[in-house]
Image 1: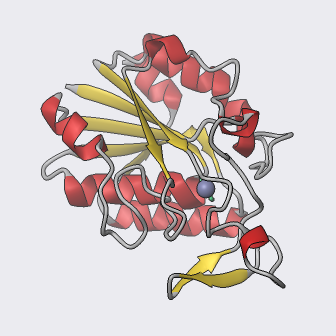
Image 2 (image 1 turned 90 degrees about the horizontal axis):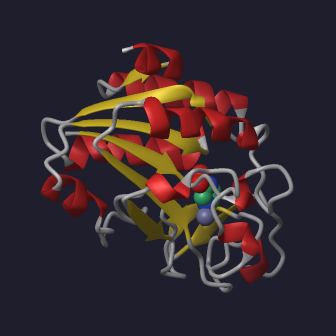
Length: 208
Ligand code: VGL
Ligand code: ZN
């Protein structure tokens, strides 16, 4: 079975959102085309879903400013602006995303003491989300990944897919993803490719 994972295509990561990824909204029409014409059997989406007191927020660390390095539960942690707080508009999927076609939504980042870039598990790798179990139950053997942000949640989700789903083929759809930092994106693509993840374009998938 072939699956598409849409990572964090939420208002918070699009222009006007609290942690806007440059041009993040440009991926929405591409994602919709993949959803509708990509030939996928299963479509899943992750949703960054933080409590208002999440420890990745600079606001929870007196004296620290957004985008500085800090610490969370003894681990290095980027201090983010408050973003994707549960039940707020910032956490909702982009209004133009075709959410009707999504079979399963994996929320993440609910534990205030640890961040969760990957849709599969927390950054400390202690607690798993249900996503690996869901994809295994659906007998998914091919997983294409796209979304926001290439250098954070997309990257960590792709690397974990390889680690946690033995034998799966993972591809990253580059033009259906956008990153926060151009240097970080370059490095992320190299890390993914080093793990055997193919970087592909949506046109190649839609042409098949
Ligand atoms: C993300 C930073 C913090 C992401 C989520 O979706 O890439 N980045 N929370
Ligand atoms: Zn977050």
